Length: 354
Image (cartoon, rainbow, N blue to C red):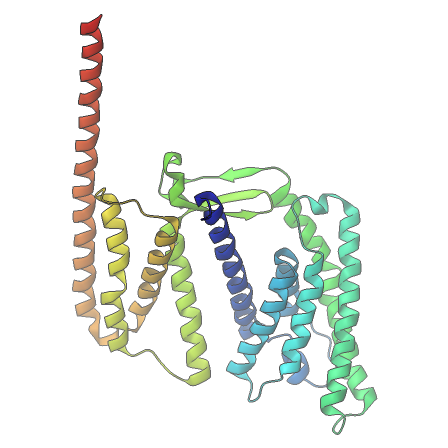
């Protein structure tokens, strides 16, 4: 059986890797909705144009921060779900091209203090040039394979391959190293631990109720359950929007109100039993129950004609919450007084013996 600390470390790594993958995939999709995906500038506009690739820029930067595996997964899935939502057909070769680009740029992954040495920015510059030429070659190859009947080689070379290379030069090769230097200087120059009760809602004595996210060498602590709320709400927004775009399915008011009745129960039980002192909650249960409540919070926006019922439901759950807090605080005060009395009795006994 694994020691608890090792098991906790493994679970934390799994959670962080899943969170990073989700963040990269969802950010790729959301930015693509605004500016178009990496493929949009080539499939939607087949003639030669000079454009700053915002999605290409952001994706490359995140892939370097996250690493090659995350870049590979996010490049493929981010492009795939965008095409699924907005294209009439799936161009799987573009998913492969962007996945390979994410893998290549992520090979020279960011590490804290890396860009305090100017030579590493130069190496990143070289990696970006190599990755851009390889991606350009892949675009040339796939476009030739899939469009050789419709487009001549010169058109494919100019309007696809060269177009991507120029876009990469305008969007990546010079700006990404500069941004990485600024990121490293700003967040990794010195070790910092930002522990604010605004983010954690707990004193440092209760730091086990927090999770820490690291940016460079800056460690920011957040309340575990609240982090679950935020992740759950954002995840729910993303998934529901994705489903509505792909399948044109909307969340019914009945489903939303039923979810709002059921989903908060595990969180109230987990927090309440801990507050009353019957058990100690874990990081995993706090994250999970917070995530579930976050989903419920987002689904409130779909309750429509059930707003009056929802108002009473919210009052009901908050009443339970405050009652649990009241009785929990009473138990804590009682326990504290008992400990004080026990300590006084021990001191009096010691004085009597003397």
